[in-house]
Image (cartoon, rainbow, N blue to C red; front, side, top):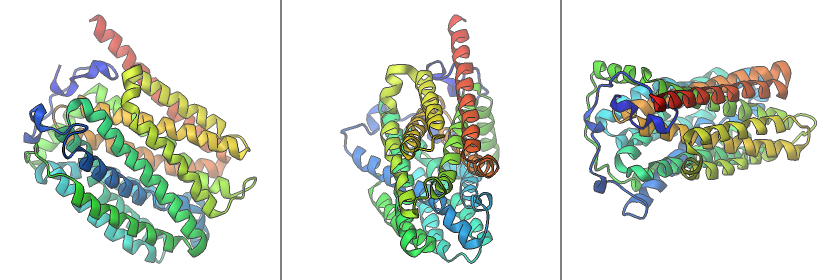
Amino acid sequence: MTPASTGASSTLGAAPSVPSAPSASDVPPPADARLSPGGPGYRRMSFALFLAGVATFALLYSTQALLPLISADFGVSAGEASWTVAASTGGLALFVIPMSALSERFGRRTVMTASLVVAVAVAVVIPFAPSLTALVALRAVQGAALAGVPASATAYLAEEVRPRALITAIGLFVAGNSVGGMSGRVLTGWVAQEWGWRVALGALGLMAVGCAVAFRLLLPAPRNFTPGSLRPGVLVATVRGHLADPLLRRLYAIGALFMTVFGGVYTVIGYRLTEAPFSLPQGVVGSIFLVYLVGTVSASTAGRLVGRLGRRGALYLAGGTTAAGLTLSLSDSLGLVLAGLVLITAGFFAGHAVASSAVSKTATVGRAQAAALYQSAYYVGASAGSTVGAVAFHAGGWAGTVGVGLLAVVGVVGITGVGSRAARVAARA
């Protein structure tokens, strides 16, 4: 078994892999050099990465709650307006691997800082976009810039945090994602109701500027990073090694499918709630995203969930919770729709935290590239989910979007089942 497969039997099943080309930064530092809960610097690091997650998700999905207003302003359909979301997630998916290579050479903190600087600069320009085409183009640039944060954050944590605290630390970063997604949508919803979507995006950009400044001031300098190579051959060999590992491929697919559900649901929910029988005002629709607080809790407690059920058990539970929420959301009762969103959000964030931490634990070489491949698959799922979910809504209403989500959950359960069988076979062998 190669180093990239270490710990596979504790996740989705052991499998042989092609060796990845190691970089100097992949050498594990001594345990006593890493941060741990209660130790010096751990809280600063956690809060800094929490703020980076807030800024990233707030900017990445900044137009999602505003799609009905953007559709009305530019006179376009839900499917066309959804490209303002798909462009940002697609840009991130495309650039996350190159950004991970830069982080291997120039450092995780440097790349994350540069990414946030460019992203918030674009955020200041976006409210002045003269057309939908210009808005989509700017959102693509913003998504590409933001790619440096998820490409570097989990690698930073794997190097700077003690192994036993890794799942908890990654869960806190994912929790920051959920808070960013929630606060961005709530803020833009209420501001847009009074002053329009352009002012709402401007206000969100100012919030992201504050998060970026605080992140740079708080994040401790890395103590265990050693620059690696930028040679294309090394990067290609490392990526090829990860993609040859069946366990990592399963984790990448699970992340993509979970995000397909989440992207589709939250891209379309604004249209559903502003139409009959609900006919809610924009500010109230934005407040619906307070449900993200549930994701903050489920992501930050993923470590305890894995401790009780194992990773495969946690993934089954996350998938089942998401499916139950999708089914419940078909009701025409606002209370049941909200309950469905709670379950969808809890299931998604738990599944995402479990899968992403499993990638970081499994890959002992080329961690940045392993995390980048996961993020790439994850945001491909986000882009596909937002577009396909909107198209399904146009064709078949909310039931169409739910149908897409349920198919994705079936995929998650099926892939996890394949991993379970692989683990049993490996145990017998």
